[in-house]
Image 1 (tube, rainbow, N blue to C red):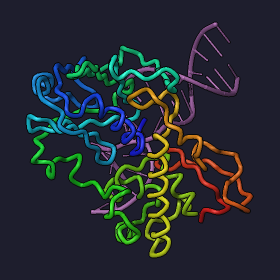
Image 2 (cartoon, chains in turn green, purple, yellow):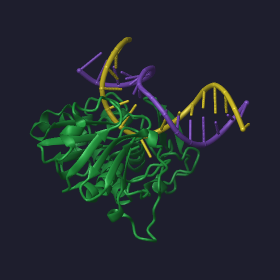
Image 3 (cartoon, rainbow, N blue to C red):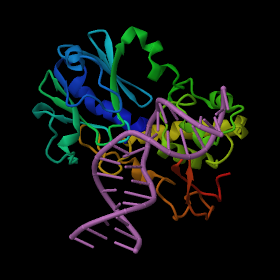
Length: 287
DNA sequence: AGGGGGACCTGTGCGC
DNA sequence: TGCGCACAGGTCCCCC
């Protein structure tokens, strides 16, 4: 399901149900997702307070009163839902109730305050792990991540340096979480379209001003997508059941055969395959 | 060493 | 209607 904007949307949806509240009971309904659940998962979580719910790249990080952090990744198809009377929505609110198959409810958190938070993931590419919060720098999933697109550390100069000497395509480079954290297939396609750069271009050939333009495009597309509540494909929904809207603003992703939106371009969006995944771009204006 | 492709899973939608 | 195939937002791992 999720790239950075969708994970951030989930984080914001879960915050009122989880932040500052104790986990009264936690349970895993199976031994593993992509990886095994941590040892004594239920015991280590039950009774502890979620001090804060953070996000880094595509990871949700629940900071626990026990001194541990619960790291959660949604893989391709993971999602959270909340059931709670006191958090229910007002009449007239736009509500989309995703029909999740309960057979894929893999983890459940009963929260102080009455909310039940359920993790559902049909494909099970997601995972959860626990690590000591003080040892975050050594956490393998977090240690080598590049800068957040919205941080000061991410800039044209950073991209310029990160792409230097790279012989892979720019598409592959931007998907590399060490270069910049949180991008996935959709937002890479969108950012490259905005920057007028072909996804097939060799990364090392994007120096100086073009790297600056690309960094700006990445920042903008991620910021706009977060603002829109992420993108809703198939039946993905935010944790509070609301849909994101950014999919209506895709300029290239999923638009094979349609007109390029660059003014006066007149080109047609094509789909190609790179790294065994779909890429969408306009060969007319993206070079 | 860097980079490309397959593997991990299940569900869905499309063409025949 | 039914079947099989292609494809899906991620990322680890193996092999070249």
